[in-house]
Image (cartoon, rainbow, N blue to C red; front, side, top):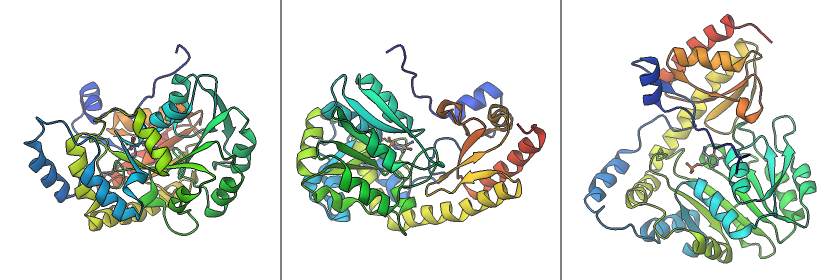
Length: 360
Ligand code: PMP
């Protein structure tokens, strides 16, 4: 375990306020939705709060019913988790023994890496090509010992995505005994155009596929921790066996159900992100900085400067972003799209930071 670095989340707002003696702090570091959750969500939580003396429904009965209808899959194709993070752990628990191999991209969402190491798996990492998953490289990295391949689509921290065509060829070629974990945490922001609709893949009898999604992002429930997997009945059954019986708390269940029923809120969130994202692109272009076009609610930008200095400058003025050294992306920061007011503040301070910091 000594060679495993724990996951370092974005700094909490309260911590920065305390440490820096600042009154106003904005967090653009953890790809959260900056809007408060839907009113319907708050009402459902208040109503359900009086029943928290009871254990939650371990099978997520009502949420399962609603989601199965929403996605047009069977209830038995669904598995719920304490955030979609937990599904990553469950998949590794169920399918990987020490010494087995797991294929991941590099860089990508760090939890795949950390959780695989905790399981004693051997990692085979495939470098991104031009900030995008190299799907041919991923295929080539698979050996007889490979048990799981993780694909973040779209990817975090780049925001890039694997197209329908690329995903189709990968799935056609992948060996049938390998579990393909398709992480679609940002699905609602990404869908459309040549982004792959993967749900029908779970019907393939000759492939092992799990698709993971979450209520943390577009639905604004990050603090409650609820995500879900969509898989064949056989895979869902196996994951169910290894989960903790009450892994999704009762407030999370009612909140997710209410969030799912508020389509208008979800569409508003996506529209806000798409509109504001253009302003980030414009700013970076005006500063002659390169960024990765994103299908998510964050953007990865190459500051071409010391990104530790840039993020420190931002932090000292109450703006938390993600500095990318831990991903070995030197000079890069990842910034989450906030409210229009938060974004305006970021644009002003980031411009100052770039102008005040020497170019590499
Ligand atoms: N996958 C990816 C690619 C992510 O970026 C995140 C959130 N940072 C998650 C999974 C986990 O989300 P949650 O556990 O909140 O559902």
